[in-house]
Image 1 (cartoon, rainbow, N blue to C red):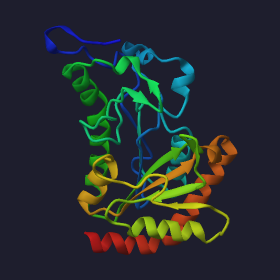
Image 2: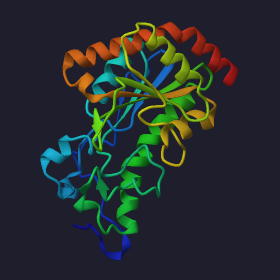
Image 3: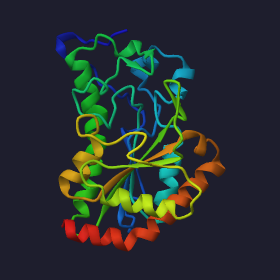
Length: 268
């Protein structure tokens, strides 16, 4: 399935009445963290016709990070922090992949072929970048720009599957960083205090600017203390699990908030 247009220009990706490319929550929140959720939604623009996939595939982890948006919303409320959520599926364009990376617009994911991503023209790709990727990242940049005068940390919320390629993934929560490990280390230390969690240090995914976009670009390139929190999906399958996980992360954040503020001050 391709969606090429005449004259080398793809038609408008989002139709009238479709949801916007990002959602802002508690945008004037006074907390010191800015929260983002790159894979918040499994929504597909109507004109892409579900990318040729069945609904079971679109409900699975290949299309989004199940539970991540719900945890992020609760954290935004608990920490009084602004939150930016992506509005469309990572299968349309992945908001945490550099443009040009093979997974930016994936032709396969977890062994599943994505018909609607095969044989795309440059115009097709550009329409996705312009309609979804750039607006989401502009919203993050604008919020960080508006807070440049005050200490701010950037925290990205994701979720991961309990099993991948037949391998069990034992971590209940992972905290990842790129070159600057300071905020991730503080969060891991605070989460470890209860003694009842299996934690991943740069697991299940370390951050690398060759494959990750949000933390390298909006966090470390600005000198903003930043970290990615990954939550195993079986921990947040129910509303009770989501609430408990958000409460645990919020409590850990509060334990290290003064130290985090010192990091921010040294980074400014």
